[in-house]
Length: 372
Image (cartoon, rainbow, N blue to C red):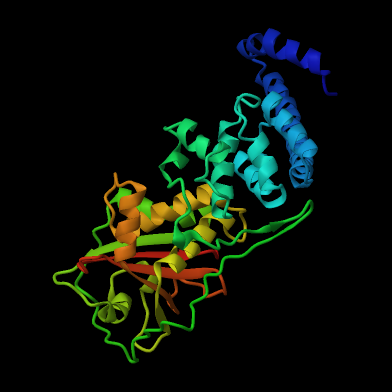
């Protein structure tokens, strides 16, 4: 017979140590079994509360109007939701608000730091959500003021305060109270194709991967943030400058797991792509996530897309956004797919990106797959 909760606590703190010392460990084990069962039940109850709370927050965020918005902000200010449910994350709430609330209402309420002192994380995320959707962040007002008062230590403060031209027309998921629709447009385009002729040379390249741990982590930032199934990164320093036309034939010969075992006639398709299309692919990977995750949403999706682009283009580790942009614009970008075992070739779930540096003496590669 199970003990009442108060009685169980008395036994744990009052008798367990003594009973164990007097040779009755089975009594202690019985206490532990009861505690484990109650702990599991309490965790499930907590998860149920989190699911309910996330649903209510979603309703408030998705109901247009200042009244609903104010009630949500009051909740977040007075009783900040705690838990691990994705729907309780501030970045997710900011993304919902940017999708469903009017920009003037958001600017007038959320960015009033006198009224809502504790919501800097919400403001930080919402600023970039609105920026990517085309909100004017340069005209004098709360949005521009935020760039001067935001915490300088915050990771999102590294990003440009204005939307760059290659970030225009970013894709976002579509959410309702009970559902959502999203997807990463990772399929290789028909334009810009540079597929090397088959059979390809079977001689492997003598180049060796020189990616450090830090560079590897920077390159894979977007798929890692998006929770994709697997990703890899490689960097190769060339003995002499290559022309962009030489890169497609070199890629399948490089010592990379993503092309290991690829035969001379196996499918290897590659296309040259503008930098903006590469950024959008990286942004969607991080922001929308994979088939089993919801991603990190617009603000942090923007950050990790820039990080991956920095690593691929070879920007210095301490480079600011302006230097990363310049390096990326001067790089040559490629998108590839292959029938290698590493890829699973499900539509929208596999891709490879390669970047030829501005001096044409460095090739960096990112491969990502969203299948297990």
